Image 1 (tube, one colour):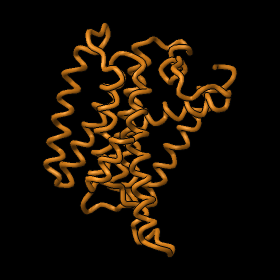
Image 2 (tube, helix red, strand yellow; image 1 turned 90 degrees about the vertical axis):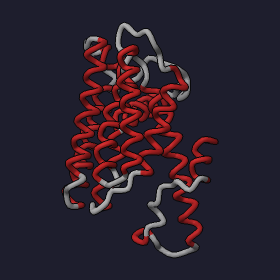
Image 3 (spheres, rainbow, N blue to C red; image 1 turned 30 degrees about the horizontal axis):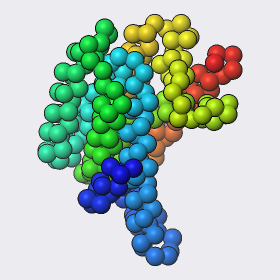
Length: 239
């Protein structure tokens, strides 16, 4: 939270409620504080999502790598060269670390490593500013690029909440563990989650060039399949 607040105080913030389309009256300062609260929520949420999803060797690094690769492309497309170079540098770091983190792992990210990747990706998502694109078609791009960690965190949170279990207690009920419980091999489960991240990234890239209506319908379709996956993985007969 302190790290997120430092980002906000440095002038980096989501600007959703400050958009004139959301103005319904009242003091403009209210909308500024709503955006700041949303920024802190986004930064803290994505940071912890990458920490929570890091339940197997190579998983968090692979998910980070796909997100960084697509951020590198879209930031270059928006002429944010410095940001594109930063994402390229981070992508190279992830590739180098993946060589040692892939099974059998000789290196582990730990909480601080996974949280750092999540925090950097969350900040990059805020700094990304698409040019000559429909804002209504690009607002959900960061959500899809980190969609797998968000899904995993949501699955664990609501599953434990529904069963009356502690939310922040460590457990083997993450997406990876549930896939393995279904009979999928450990490495195949990691590859399946990496594939899901790749598909979501491609969908985000396609939606970026579409008019608002079809782009948001595409995003709605992703949410629909996420709900189906949630229902399937958390069904009492399977978990």
